[in-house]
Image 1 (cartoon, rainbow, N blue to C red):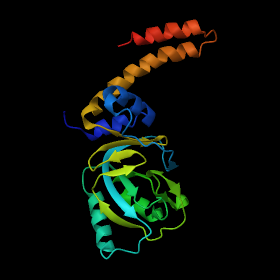
Image 2: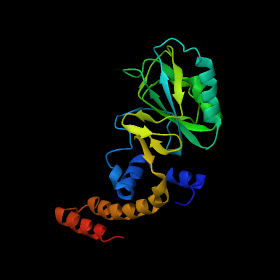
Image 3: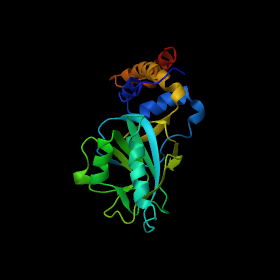
Length: 229
């Protein structure tokens, strides 16, 4: 696999996440049932798509502060400030059920954006929606008022958020629909696959939107689309 560049990631932001998932069905068919969020999430500050390197963490919100809570928090901030960038933080709330206390609000959205993090995907809760950092995109499990005893438990490990498993250094793509992990070995093939599929869909859509559309025209358009390579 040739090395990735930020241009590769930026190019993938040209498409929405469902389109990326469609391309992955072809580029990586063994992952058709995995690698993406499987629950509707709350969208905060999301305008378009985000594609970036993954950083990970796990939080807890109901336990009183751990003895090393401040040191852990500071080490976590150093971790998210490190390369590679741009990045997206994927945080697993380990409470059962998740979403009791908010790690995310005005302060942390501003801190993360300032340190080069473009966005967040979490099964946890967010708050301070009116004060949310402009330009910081987030998908969250819920919205709530309190941060409770929220603290970083671990970071840099494999996490799981609504069916999507992610590890440090992965590539994630997300928008208001949800998030998906893109295997690095297929990233460069995604644009060509999307362009080919778009040409096929254009044939069918043109027929479907015509005033004299019929089942016969549909069958003909689908046959024409299959011949596009």
